[in-house]
Image (cartoon, rainbow, N blue to C red; front, side, top):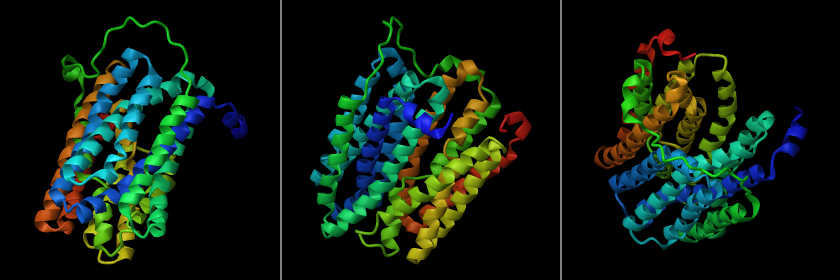
Amino acid sequence: MPETVTTRNIPRTVWALGFVSLFMDLSSEMVHALLPVFLVGTLGVSMITLGIIEGVAEATALIVKVFSGAISDYFGKRKSLLLVGYGLAALTKPLFPLAHSAEMVFTARFLDRIGKGIRGAPRDALVADISPPEIRGACFGLRQSMDTVGAFFGPAVAIGLMFIFSGDIPLVLWIAVIPALVAVSLIFVGVNEPAHEQRTQHFRSPIRLQLLYSFSPAYWRVVIVGALFTLARFSEAFLVLRGQQAGLSATWVPIVMVVMALFYTLSAYPAGKLSDRVSRKALLGVGLILLILSDLVLANAESITMLMLGVTLWGLHMGFSEGLLAALVADTTPEGLKGTAFGVFNLVSGFSMLLASALAGLLWQTYGSAMTFYAGAAISAVAFILLLMQRQGNDHMK
């Protein structure tokens, strides 16, 4: 189907969901680009505290995501769950500029990530419900691409506002509330949910413990590699603070997130096309090598040029690895067990994320920033070696 026809035939609700994602990501990335500097520079929190806040927040999103799909299927009210998820995120945004303590920021981040975990499954299910089968891929691609646009422009807008308002971080955080409110308003006026049949089903846990023994060794090796990969990929808040350490002012610090998002966006599509032609294991290996190189460059970054090289490599590693582990989970589990397989994988990844950022903060505060990135490189190297040890034929990683 020609691209113009496909675009014209994409349902109005999919466009609305795309703009919802764009505005919420614009708001969230404005906050995330400045929050580490605000926490450490203005509120004076320690690196360990920063690591715990970021780790708990990101782990919460992953763990809630495990159960959000089952909750969405049970209630069937996709739009209501979207309003809860996005509404909770919007309500937390004013807490950031109002915060006078680490505890208040922790509460805001925790609730924000619960919202993120809740909204993902019903949003994707709603796109699937309303998309004609022949253009379903285009519908999902449109929503994801608009999400990426928001993630890219959020830090860029933060830089512009920091210039305009002379580095007033709390004021910029207040302005970030506006796109979040726009996102929630768009759900009310633009998202229409198709009528569902009356549901009589009972809630079904996404993780059925009795099935864990049914998984192959190949699946468990993917889980271990995924856990190590997540452990090596601590919160991007540490990249922002490394930027400040390398000489970026508070106004220019969000450029770290802009560059990372740019190279992630540029590499994700070609990497995705490659994954259909070459071994997924090989591509994941490339992603791990890029992460190791990024960590080593960032550990030794004494100039802004070196910093930007490290951040560029970090963005490229995300483009080459995002979605590959999920594909490998699907490759190594039979059809009837995929729900539990993804549930277990996301649960383990959630706990790894918590440990990763807490460990990063502890190493930074105790031994300095370089040690945080050296540790990330070492853990990535262990994951890479484990990947090499797997026999490609047995693990179905093509």
